[in-house]
Image (tube, rainbow, N blue to C red; front, side, top):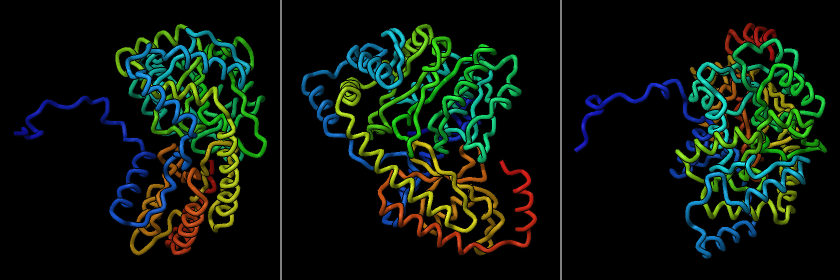
Length: 422
């Protein structure tokens, strides 16, 4: 017999101010509606629609059949550690030892463990808005203080170094970079990275470089790891990466990081008390992913390029929608604020959450509100799905937006929006 919840001890307070991941929440709503037989076009999830390449699947099956199902070293099997070291050398010109690499159950797990290793209560960590939804709660759960710096659409959503320097305080300990970025697709050039690195060196900051989308780049953009700029930059940079995006392995949960051996040792200590190790057979699949034929990645990126071009063109052709072309990743982050202070029936669209709700309920298209990423004026659309799904979703969005009617306050509201435009 279950006791009434009011008779039980209270839950921990640390989670009361933390919201569930809105990207996963919106994707879950779309999946639930589909299961109920409702025709929903899901453009919310950052999940490639491609099958995991066959040679990676076969490596997992072979490992399982070979009995490689037990615990592994906390940091990862030596074969995967060596494959990661080889990848960094070949792709980024970086040299790491085995004691500088750690494997985890996805890049999200790696990032959380990294914040555990670096952040003491009250330490400040700088993130750039729009930011990936999990940076802020992960820092907060580790008792750090989030310092969010707004980037500008006019700057391609790349951090302005002068604003960064003015924001730093005595308690600032680290800065998080994400290039290419989720949700904007922003990409940092060598000059952009050098400006950030110079500030980090002068102010003695850790650099956390989230490079999960490094292979998914468009229009000739070249991804550069900030750690590759100079040995003194590499010494204070922890590079985070994983298999989910480039190899269509989202559910497999395999990520990794490389950096200072002391940081990796601290992360390993934390891992030993929570995940123990990434799944053993998935680690063997990771070896195949990194050391096998990379043609599969190029094929997926070519498809993403085609989808990106189509999505950006369609969005910019819609009235009241503006979209910067992403340099990488597989998201569009269009500005949709010109549809705020419009209404359907008696319901007024006040922000991105209202608009995402309207598009889900009326157009049956699932998107993620920009508020989840720290910028309410925008909305995130994933183009990790197929072209047919994108075309249908964009058709529905365009039709639904055209049905919205301005309220009597619309013009004044829009004047205010332009004055505070990010």
